[in-house]
Figure: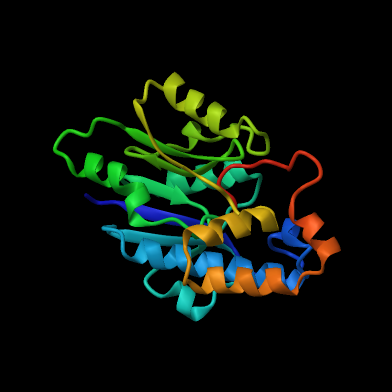
Length: 232
């Protein structure tokens, strides 16, 4: 299987990444969790049976993060345009994931990998829906930018609309497990509980122990959050 795995990511600079984590975290704390999430995601991708690994980066990655990846900048435009550019660039089977699901493991992708390793795959596309209504992964056996371009990326219907777009193009689409994105600190705490003993879980525990009671109330969003699909 000549699989390309692309990770859409953003340089973890305080005040420019995961801004909805602060408050209650400081911008530096939010950037630290973002970096840990990105590093875990990249480690997972390194263990996948992929022929090509792309780090599609807004900004400059750390040298340790770039190891094993071909690094390329993100195209201009909205998120759907940036995802479409990756699809148009890929020459064969493509899996795109974001940096916001540090709980991601190979097991979450097992159905996709088994299907596409078969002589005749059952599905020409796979979608990993997110708990907030977006999606954390999209995979296309024959990637085309038109399969994602124009799909609204900042609504709680993003995942459903992307699934509908694939169906309109006649693609049989398999569904990966639903995962929770790290948008707010409450998300980070729930994700950390799934991966105890990791650097990410340790950092979340440390931050939580340092928060005063009033700040803890800010860990949960007070209004419907701004939703999105795969996020850098």
